[in-house]
Length: 257
Image (cartoon, rainbow, N blue to C red; front, side, top):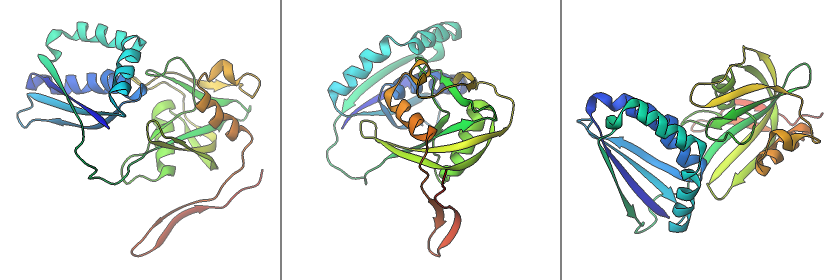
């Protein structure tokens, strides 16, 4: 692995403003092009913020740099920084590091997404700020100590405003490039006024999408695969439980369609 330590010197009174800028622009720009944020820290006096990014190797880092420099979100970030003023951060510096050994167990980022239909048979899709070249099914990352079912309800609500009823899991997909494991659900729309989430989704709506026109909406092949599998699903059972002592929290059996 190859790591980049990026340090920003800031004015303490602008910490929240810088944090909002980081989460709206810096993080999505890097993450959408394959970088992984290991962690982000601030000094006790709130004068420095340090972010540690992980790449597969230096070539991966250089590719991410080339990709993001031409992105629409980066141009938006430059405009927003100009509006906020040059002193959003006073200066920045970066250092590159290589690991000296393997001290942590293997890790994977778990994400969830959902194929959600309404009574007309239309599918709920979103267009994200940091992946605005394509529509996709709503979803996102599972938070610590959160079940995958709770996560898909939360992510759909946050990204679209919709409340859903989960029917089952239609597929599990592993991106070995970014170490992401994605669980895809099928669900039905229950209620809620659809609306984009500021800073994350720019378009939200139900669309008449099927195998014949999916490429007109969903441009990325791995997103298309999840969509097509969910469109004509084979459901698999899933269970949520605790151990020591064992407690079954929820289980849904394999369904027939």
